[in-house]
Every structure is written in C-alpha cells, then in structure tokens.
Length: 520
Ligand code: ME8
Image (cartoon, rainbow, N blue to C red):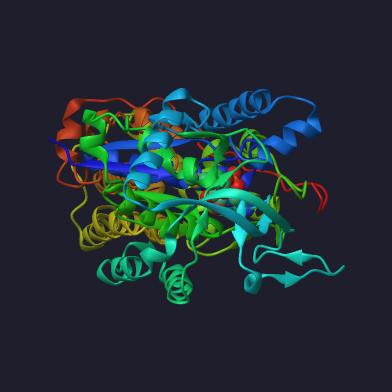
C-alpha cells in the first residue's frame, strides 16, 4: 500500500480577501502534494479558513454583518482563488463547521482530564491583529508612544476571567522534543529562535475569552469561548475525523508536514505540541515556516490595505507563470520582495525564451522535417550522452531531492540549468542545417532533444501542471509515463515505436509585456 503523506497549510483568516501570501503558501503546498503524488505517495492535503476570534468579530461589526456572513463570503473567495490557482487540496476545512466544534471540545476535554487547565483571571497585553498574547518584555514602543507587539501590531491591556493551559509544565518536554528531533522545526533559523524562546521559560497560556462569543464554546463553561488558536490548531485533526477513530485518522496522523509562515511559528511549535502532549495525541513530524513576501519591500496585509489580488496576477500573467515565479524567485525559508516587473522578466527570460523556445524549436523541426513522426533512433554521440546524463541527473536526483527539502528555488535552478544545456546543445548541433547534409544526424539530435524535453516537462508538472499537461499531450506522452523515474533515454525507443505523430506545435508561454508605470 502506498505510503501516506499528510500535508497542511495554515488556515487563513477570512476577514478579508486572500492576498499574495496566502497564494504563496498554498501554491508551495500544492507543489509538494503533486510531487509526492507523482512519487507514488498516498497524499492528503488540507487547507481552509480560520473563522473565529476577535479579529473576525470586530471586522464583521465594522462592516455591519454577522461574523458568519463575513466568513461565508470571504471563505468563498479563498476557495475560488484556490480553484483558479489549480490547488489540489483534498479537504477545505472551515472552523465554523459543527464537526470542528466537536473536535475542539474533545481536545479541550482531553487536556482538562490531564489536569492541565484551570480557571483564573487574565491580565496582560493582547494583539487583535495577531490574535496573540504578549509578555511586557516582548513589546516595543511605537512612534506615538503606543505599545507594539514583536510583529509591529498594536496591543491592548486586557483583564478577563479566563481558562489557562499549564504551558509552564511543558518547557522540558518541548526542549527534549526539539533536541531529539532536529528536523521538527525548519528552517534552522526558526528552530534556534523557538529554542531560545522556550529556554527563556514558559508562562501559562490564557485559552478562553468571555468578552465576545464568536468561537467554540468551552465545555462546561458556556460563557467562555476558546482562544481562537486552540480551535484553529485543532483543524489539522478535525479534517481527519477526530475525535472519532476513523480510518483517515489512523492512516494520516501524525501529520508529515505543517506548512506555515514564519509569523506563526510559535503557535505551531510550542503551543500545538504542548496541547497534543497534554491530550495524549502523537505530534506532527515537521513544521516548516516559510518566509514573507513583500510587495516592493513592503509587507502586504489586509489590515494595512496594500493588498494585491493574486487572482488578478494569475489572470494577467497565467496561473503557471505565477506559480513558477513564486517558487523560483525566492528561497523558500526566507523573505522576498516581488514586483510585476520581476514576474514579467522571469517569465520572458526563462519560460518563454528558454524552455518555451526550446520546445517550440524542437517540435517544429520534427513537425516540418520529419513529417511529425518521432525519429527511430536516439543520438549516441558523446555530446548526446553527456546531455542525457545531465538531464537524467537533474530530473531523477537533484530535483526530487530539492523538492523533498522544500528547496523549490534550488529545484528550479537545476531545471533551468538543464534547459540551458539543451539550448546550448541545439545551438551547437544546429539540426535545422542538417536536413540536406546529414538527415540521419538531424534525426538523432531531434530524438535526443525530444527525450530531454519530455523529461524536463515531467519534472516540473508539480509547479506548472496546466502548461506541462498541454505540452506532454502534444508530445504524445501518456499519463502513466509522467513520472521522472519512468521516463528517459531508455524509454525513448518504445515511444518512437508507438508511431505518434506531432501536430503543428503551439507556443506554450507567450511573451509578456512590462507594466506601463511603476505603480501598475
Ligand atoms: O495566521 N507572505 O492566518 P493568516 C507569506 N489563521 N506568507 C504570508 C504572508 C506574506 N506576506 N502573510 C501571511 C493566520 N502569510 C492564522 C493561521 S493555522 C492553525 C492559523 C501566511 O490569514 C501566514 O504566515 O494571517 C500564514 O501561514 C498564512 O499565510 C495564513 O495567514
């Protein structure tokens, strides 16, 4: 039976429409999900919306709608964006679902039974934008003297009766977890940050609120709703049917990977494992915190109102161009600054001029000079073999290794190197000049290139699924061969024998125009 792989994104706050950060994280997760499916794993991929909390309640009040109406509308935009971006999630969870309330109450009850919850009075700083409590020592002074959280958001002094979670009791257990599982938190920089935070000592965590009621009710204390992060984190279990002992839960829990942004590392690597240990539930295997995307150097956020609509970028430049750009341009664990010029330049130079042109030149020559029929014999000169060995290494080894490490930029860099090698080969071999002088050599060169292009296309299906399907369909490469390990020079003779005839090739990636003004 295929080895299961459970992958989740953060669930997004639907207090506004989705922004580029949401698209970035979900596209990265989709690339991984597709990569692991292509590698034969039984993948379960979950995303969704995080609908409770004060931020949602306040936004709804400002708009004069109920939180549920706000969540219904905005959650719909997330879902349609993800459809537009070709995201192949298996489950889109909404935390307002009844099943999710039941799961959150079950984990609460399990923590309570373990003796980790107690009722007290909370007095301290709270940031509504981050939905997070902060210690006085973590705060800084803003320009007009107001207190700011480490994320730069305003905090307010809050006094309330609250349930508390005995987080202080988990310091040693968490530190052993990090020490025994060096890959539990990635990248390394985030791991170090979290370890320093935990080593500094943990205070018990306020985990319920009484000042509003948009949330999951605390079992046995119905004037309290759970702190939004308690229920939000539980979504990863709800999606598998918890607390029922379902087949999905047995098969996919513990999760292989929680993919999140760096701002919510503490919730996933301190609070979440502590809650799970308390409830007696296995811990996820890994949390990977990616960097932040900045719009020309500035953070985009719904609250700041400088938000780009990722759906519009996809429509303007193409879904696959956007997917490729986001993973190629930035190192996944680090922040990156993007602009429309950068998307256009990257797409034109790498997708249109390098890969698109390589495919177009090769397939056009097979179409024109060979009547669309695949040549019978692949090239066997040293240069042919050197090229095929290079492509093989990239497609079968380097790219899978990089995808596994979530080093997407590195995978695509190796891919681009392989594309350049093919372009150098075609320029040197000049098959267009061989039709009259050496037609046999022309055929060998074209067969070599055809094989390499098929391999290169298969290896980036996870990143550019729509365009690569189009190309591979045009090349006659069947679905069962769309696996980097199944396709290569050894496969070519069988392919040539099928007698597939190429149609006149269509361009894959049109050249894009730069926006007219800087602000566009
Ligand atoms: O944090 N660049 O929701 P959210 C890259 N509901 N990633 C970004 C980003 C940016 N500019 N802005 C946000 C929440 N993100 C909680 C999560 S999980 C149980 C609950 C990432 O809508 C962010 O880091 O604010 C997070 O991983 C995801 O988008 C959703 O952010």
